[in-house]
Amino acid sequence: MRKFWIIALDIYKKNVKSGAFVVMILFPFIIMGIAYIAGSFAGGVGETSNFGVVATDSSLSQGFDALNNDDYDFQVIDSEEDAQKELADEKIDGYLVLSLDGTEVKAIMYSDTTLGTTTEMVIQQYLTAIQSSTRAASLGLTTTDVASLNEAANFTSERVSFDEDGKMVIDENDTFIQSMISFASTILLMVFIMTYAQIVAQEIASEKGTRIMEVILSSTTAKSHFYGKIVGVLLVALTQMVVYGLVFGIGFQYFKNLEIVQQVLNGISAEQIFGPFLVFTIIYIFLGILIYSVLSALCGSLVSKSEDTAKAIMPVTYLSLGGYLLGIAMGMSDPNNIVMRVTSYIPFLSSYIMPVRLASNVASNTEAVISVVILAVTTVALMLLSANLYKSNVLVYNEGGLLAALKQSFSILRNERRKVKS
Image (tube, rainbow, N blue to C red):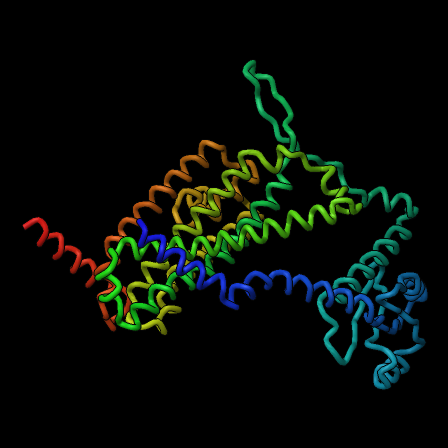
């Protein structure tokens, strides 16, 4: 046990004291800072887009005149020839040619550069509004009538349950905050797996590449070395989470009195955040990082050179990416899809999928317990298998690839067991 902790703490101290760990800690804050500065800079120096409007009907151009704001400036031009001249002289960024076919507004935008999707969508909305007004006028409708027709229907969604007497009770709808937590956990899990899978595999592959594993295994057992490596890296990941937790706690105390924060907090109860859902989410994050770390360690022990580590963890990358994409894409559109229901019980994928289903209230706590048990049992089984294979893996230098190295490792393990039995 003493040698196990020596290995684990050595890995932990080496990684925590490295410059890469400091950069890894600061990276999210650097990105947020750059995004904030870029947004502020763009908002402060943003230029107004100038467009000319050439219309066969004066009512169309008058409608555009009323739409001028800080971002877009529309100016009426008498003829298309004048508009072309102003565009050539770079006085305008483009010009619209408007015509009216009955009650249908037709428009063509001419510009010497690509306007971008956002600008095209804004202009499309303006044209649609003008066309609606034109058609309303032809039908003798007032502005109030048009607003009444376009008013959205009043739709709300309530989550219900039934008490012991079979009476329906309306529950508190906590789907929104739970969905935010589940998507945040999905992103967090993806980031941690991509980061620490590489570190785990590299730690194991680096010593194997130097051909000193025979010396190391002469002073400690293969299992102690294997578990020590994994625990050491997991302690680094835990340290990073603790740092983020402390930063969040300090930041919350500093910003909690802001009006926008108070508005968010007013719609959130402690039960919504600290209920069973959060417990399951934390368990899935922990087990997800653990099972992917074990798989990364197994893959790292199969390479002959540390330079091959990136290729060795490709299975980890693809599995993690598949779970992430399923959780983000399908989780937002249809969390009760048959694919989501099935994959929420499949290890390696369930850590991404089940929190999303729990957040959408399409999975019960009982289903979550079953999924957690399957994931935990699979993690333990993979850990035991990897530890048993580790001694033969680190002594195998096979240039035929991961599968060939794994096959050779199984063969060595079987031969050793036969010797023990005999």
